[in-house]
Image (cartoon, rainbow, N blue to C red; front, top):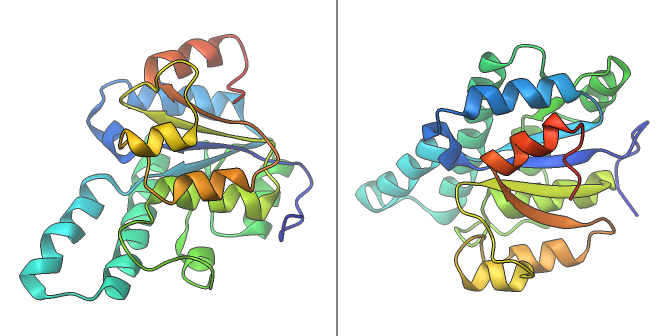
Amino acid sequence: MPDLQLPRRPEIVKLGGSLTGDPRLPALLGALARHGAPLLLVAGGGPLADGVRVLQPRLSLSEGACHRMAILAMEQTAIAFADLAPHIALADGPEAIARAQAEGRAALWLPARMALAARDLPENWDLTSDSLAAWLAGETGAAGLVLVKSTAAAPGSAPADWAAAGLVDPLFPAFAARLAGPVAVTTVEAALASLEHGSLAA
């Protein structure tokens, strides 16, 4: 059972941090904005999270500090993505997600409020934004989860295969197994093609 009650079951789309270097990112964000509710977008940390990885050994930072910094990196990337597609609503919790749904708008998750308060999230690098997207899908009772990545998954593969191939973090299969809806990996090109036909279903 989801912990959050929303008017509609969201469709979660995780946008990998590597997409910050893809020239098609503005077009994808625009297509997602036009699709609107009940999309709930999750941004990866991208170069900002990579900066945390660089700082950790240099400053001897703890895993807990890096966990919090990486979540804030996701939050900053979300703000950047929303700046590219202003019709997408930034949302830090269920109230803001519900408002976006009521307005027919796609929401872009600001993770700090919810994720930093959670007690079931490991504070280490095994947990990345992919697992956080799956965790959010579980919390909101999402209808499905789609990960948009620079690299496609092998046909017929499953979350355990994606983890073995390094496409997702090692914790992702366990988080994905808790979800009632389908889980899929797609690319920017495939996502744009699907959105042209009105759907990005997992």
